[in-house]
Image 1 (cartoon, rainbow, N blue to C red):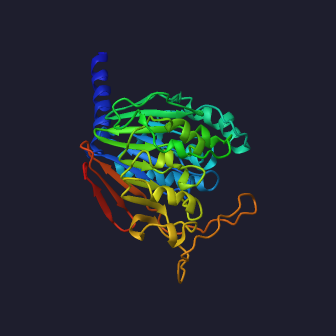
Image 2: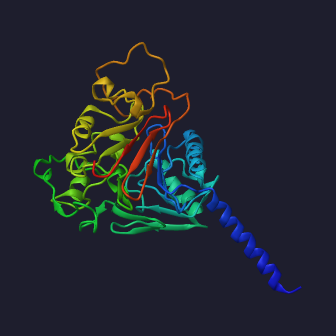
Image 3: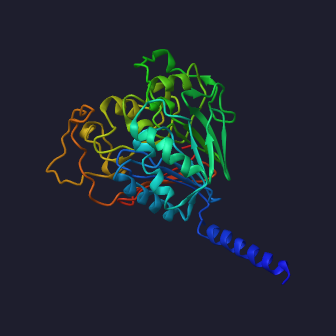
Length: 375
């Protein structure tokens, strides 16, 4: 038999497979899913091309399967079957914990990170030495550097921080980038952060006129390095709040300078949302709304947002929610566990258009708000 028919059949099958995958993605918007992984991070970006980027994979241990399933649910809603680029911001268990479980369920084509772990910890070290090389052995592995571009069809994806370093020149084409940052003069440094948080991979993403910033868990002093004396980022439309809304990140040099119209905080019931951070976020110039993945007991009623902006509330019924925030539990083995989340995990979805219009939807209650450019 001539080899030509065999080739034709194989080619037809390949074309049909690509067509089938493409057919599941019909949206003309950039869709962003901020997924509830109980105070960790998992954020899925899917542009009209269907080429996907996932930032982080949720928690380690028994929660890994739960969080992988929640990511898969978002993927199904977005109409995709694989992750084209997986960015792990840093080697903390609430950011890389679901990776192996997710990779056992779906294809991951590229693994991106900042390099080796700088904060010795047995789970992370074991994962990096034993499991991670097996995951990217049949895929692509990239160590991101500031200034790199991640090739994603339909998006301009730029790495602005990675491995403790940051871009040294302003982002070309970003509104306001390169101008002096007026908040630098009043900056008060915190203790030098030697943890993995300071190594976070930070991304600036552009879709037409729409701009979003995601800096992982980048901490206070590193925000100063990135944003001072010049604002190298400029202004953005949407900010994925850094570090779950904790007060060791989210300084005014960042939160106030970027002038985001909307912000989404991937916090937990007792992780993130502390008053010191919330005061800065709520007072950010130009910010219309803060959306939260969880109601924060650390905020209480004093610093929280209206319930329609909160995707997941408290499962255990209470007669009344205290006005005053509860004290932040001391870290360590004696810390009380966070309240169990027994119900459905709801994500917050963003749909952005090329003209800069974007809509944010709380899937728990169906509440949505559209932000139009120039308003």
